[in-house]
Length: 555
Image 1 (tube, rainbow, N blue to C red):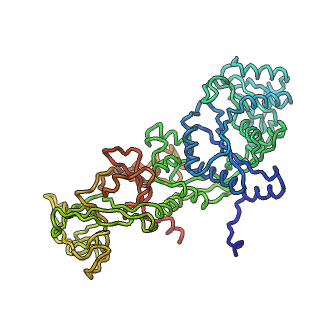
Image 2: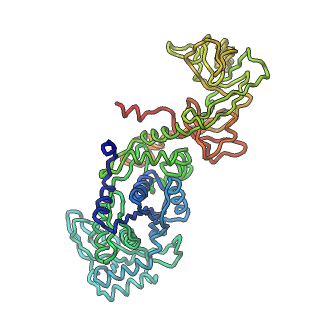
Image 3: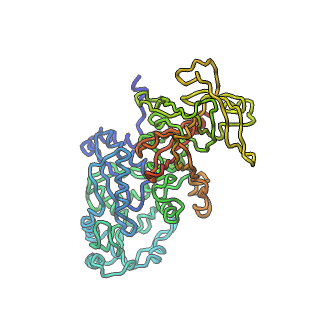
């Protein structure tokens, strides 16, 4: 029976199991997660992290964290540190922290080896000339006039490139493969270019840098990576990956591709995310509306929820758009287990309980989390004047309205049953106060009133309530797939994706912590934001209580 219910292997796991069974690499499994440090990680990277680290863990292997830092113009130490923090926060640790820049000397020698084998040459053509000579998918390319330079001439020119003798854009090193290849990437690809930029680790030691396609496979090989797992856009690159390894006669790492994670109502292009940051559409890379891991962390998502989301969507061979509602479902499901239940009023209406003694304060007991009885309880003050949500009162109630209305009764959560006796309005006819009476022997947990009410609402004691700024976040984009829409993707930014309000929260939240999660009863899940100061509490709404994904899944 256990075998029948065992979870099926994804295709990457099947490849690894087959390799182990065949004794390949002596049964060793070593993967790597190789981000370029040119931005913050996003939810798509989370899937890759879970796959690379998770597969290695499952088969007793290890994973390297390697920064593919071959483009000094866009890379920063800030991004390196944020990436390391994100990987650790997701619950993973790496065997070695490595950098492609660690291998610059090695890669330079690899390039010279190709030259010596007459498999690489220095090209003086302009980028426009090379583009024309490359041909089209249906028309073969034309050999560069510099393709037949001698080995000695190429070695000399490449050394002079390294020594900084030529301006940017005047010389490149190209692999000599096949200008008629059906794979455009195999038509003598550039493997080194000149770039006068200070590198975040090597400073100004180098002015030539390897292209990604040249550095990537060789870095895998240097580290003896057994399974190089990347996304589907690298399928055309695999032929070049294998060509370099074969002709350099180095450790034969193998590349395998899986479908990248595309999330609805979001953008996962680092270039476009950087635009949102630089053009102030968001407050930064960790803005809670961003699909970055740091943004999700700040919003209150948990690593457990993100790992569960990645597990649920699985590992596929075809790209597809994943509904963000599934991610929200996973977040909601985990927060339901761990979040402390508290009371907060987001749109207050004053209620005076006229028959409750003035000056009296009762300390009521409230359970922190009914899903976790070991989470304990807390004390909540109750007094004559309280605040409730405006939408928990209706002057002219509909037939099945079970909250507060003139002459109707409702239970206050953890407290008493009250009845609305009088509605007070201002000169404009706006309701500003309710006057109610309470049933003295109806206290929760000790109710002897015999009165049954259908509605229960939350509240806070006016005298004890704490003001807080509450940020209500919605989806950053108005359309499901902004990357596929016509025009500028920024035209589809949801201008109402952030609403900031002043709320009133129960006094226990004065001691709220950044590491804790809270359910504002009947309102959603929230977390404390880092903008909080001793003078002002700031909370972010993580996700609402409504389980939209589960309802859709049932249909």
